[in-house]
Amino acid sequence: MPNQKLSLEILESLYEKLQELSELTAKQIEILIIRIVTMRMP
Image (cartoon, rainbow, N blue to C red):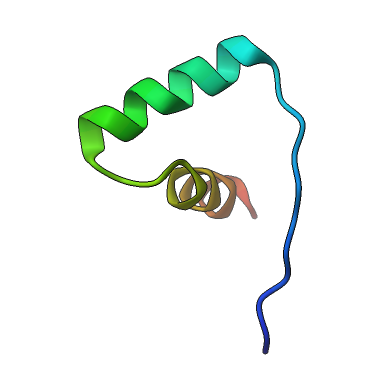
């Protein structure tokens, strides 16, 4: 199955938290978001 592109608009405060987590884990924000979403899915 091919990948799909998704654009999100989020609060700046959430982006800043993701940026901080990205720096701590050395992972791209996009990868972190995908992991968070997949962990929360039933």
